Amino acid sequence: MSSARRPPLPLPKDPPPGPFRRDVWRSPLRGPWLASLLSSALLPLIAICALTGFLSHAAYDPDLGQNSVTGSGGIGFDLYIFDWPSSPGWLYALSQGLHVVSGLAAIPILLAKLWTVIPKLFEWPPVRSLAHGVERLGLALLVGSSLFVIATGVINIQYWYVFGFSFVPAHYYGAFVFLAGLAVHVAVKLPTALQAFRERGVWAPLRDDLEHTRPEPPLAGPAGSGGPEPSGSHPASEEEASIPSAPGAPTISRRGLLATVGAASFGLAMMAAGQAVGGPLRSLGLLAPRGRQMPSSGPNAFPVNKTFAAVGIDPTATGSGWRLRVTGPDGDLSFSREQLLALPQATERLTIGCVEGWSTTQTWTGVRLRDLARLAGARASDVVTVQSLQRGGFGRVTLNPGQVMNPRSLLALRVNTVDLSLDHGFPARIIVPALPGVHNTKWVSSLRFAAA
Ligand SMILES: Nc1nc2c(c(=O)[nH]1)N[C@H]1C(S)=C(S)[C@@H](COP(=O)(O)O)O[C@H]1N2
Ligand SMILES: [Mo]
Image 1 (tube, rainbow, N blue to C red):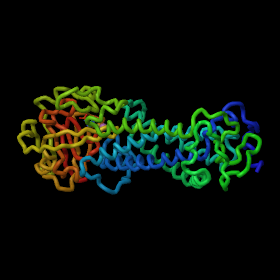
Image 2: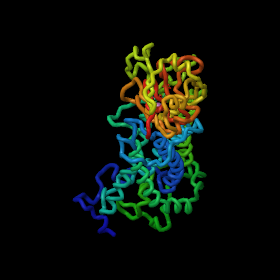
Image 3: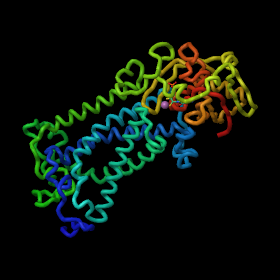
Image 4: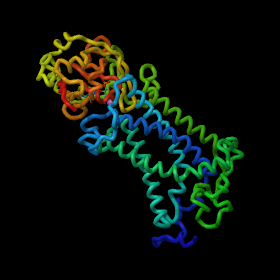
């Protein structure tokens, strides 16, 4: 097969000094068994993260202006054939909590996996044939997209909006590239992983202490060469490219490495869970950016995403001149805050579950959306478009008929027995069970009920 290895480009036969030389990579821990074990730990986390990610997008329907991927801002068709339910009330917070916990927990394992296979990044020659080139391009997309979805996710959780593109579509489309690449990768590599486990045992290499830590032997079956390494720069087979040709002495055992990675993963998961569950567990969220700007005590002491000052609404607009406009088939209505408080009030304990991985459950009081819909003459199949005093940003959202008609859905005027603070949406805000946090529009100025 030597002709297949001739570089299609005029490259020297031998790799240049540096990472392209196989003997640069000396850790005796690298090999197909370690890569397979780390991958087996990653896959369930990725599955949870992907499923909850797509559920979150389903929950974003019917529309969230600039965040929409299915509406006008996106690909223009609806991938989700069901309406996001508005019960149980903790559904979105649970889904989003799992998304962020599994995503963060995957990071140390993914990094360890990439470390295990990094010699393969520096194959020489970089491209041996068309098929090899296509395969490497696929791997580049897989690795690149995995790092992209994780980086954009972390940056978004950390409130650090540095990129010049919209997070939601970028993270969403990045996930498609990642999952497509992953599906191909799993299909191609599954036989090797099973073989590595069969030949070495799933857990057996973890019994070796530092002193007994040796490089993995080459795989014996079809995926491996079954023989000793040939001389030269090429590994006997693709699968063995990560096994060092000139191993150094181990500095950590395999179980030491896995314990370290596992501890990092568990620690990140706990920090994420602290934020996601909220309440007293919030203090576990050591890296959580939220909480800096909330009052330290009192009924309004729960996290604020965007403060009143940050969104730049004219402060006089929330004063005594504020009116809520309600439009529907029966025409145009207008309510002062006093008039809304004079309507039947409902009190509900409801959760705001934010896409950025935190949640908070508070006791909200206000007018049922269903009652306002009835006053406007809306039909049970109508959607409502909510408009905030804030223009642009998250100032407009559409809620589906189930969300409007749920008896627990409120236009909240008060929280924890006091008036909403300006930061929490005074004079009035939307609070709907199981709604993504970002749809719970603050500083509402109008509601328009209409056919979908
Ligand atoms: N008008 C408006 N409403 C908004 C936002 C906003 O930026 N503008 N942020 C949303 C987001 S992302 C979340 S998670 C919740 C947070 O509510 P809180 O700040 O009252 O805790 O409000 C939502 N309502
Ligand atoms: Mo949010």
